[in-house]
Image 1 (cartoon, rainbow, N blue to C red):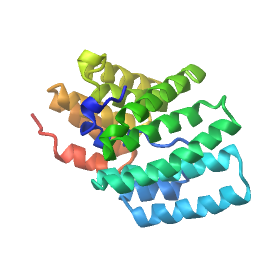
Image 2: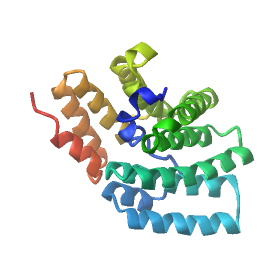
Image 3: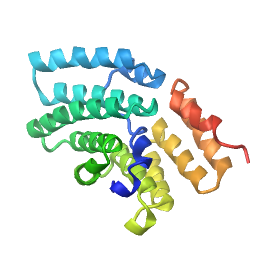
Length: 232
C-alpha cells in the first residue's frame, strides 16, 4: 500500500484516520485545533498511567495520543517531529497487540502509525509501508465492519499509483464503504471529498467537505480542504 514511489505524497497519509477509542474528547479537540502543546501534555499524562497500570487499553490510549500528535505535526509540515511522535506511539501500539492480539483496532492503529513514519524518511518507506499494509489488512480480517480500517486503507489507495493496484477509484470505494459502515465518521467524508477533487468533481468534493464540517465544525484541516476547493 505505501511505497517510496509516493513518499512525498504521504505527508497527509492517514491524517484522517483518527483513533477510535484511543482519545478522549479533550484530546480530539486538541487535534482539531492543531494544539501540539495540549497533545504533548496528554501523552505525558497517559504515559504515567500506562506505567502505573500497564494494560492493552492503557498502551492503546497512549499510542492514540501519539498518533494525533504526529498527525498534527504533519499538518504543520514538521516531518521530524511527526516521525518522533509516530515512533513513540508505534511502540505502545505493538505492546497493546502483544497483550491483546485479537483486537482489530490495535492492528489498525499500528498500521496508521507506521504510515505516519514514512514521510520523514524515504528509506523507511519499504519497511513501514509493509507494516502499514499488513497491519490494516489484519484489522479488516479481524473486524470486516471496521469503518476506520476501510478509511485507513482508502487513504493508502488514494496515494498508491494505479500501476501498483491503487488509484482514486479504489480509494473512493473504500471511503464509501467506511461511510456505509459509519455515516457519522466525519474524516471519511473529508477524504471522500479529497478523492472527488482529484477526480475532477469539485462540486461533489465540496458537498463531502461540508458534510464533514457539519459533523465536526472544529476540524481546521477539513475547513482548509473546503477553502482550497473551487466551486466549479
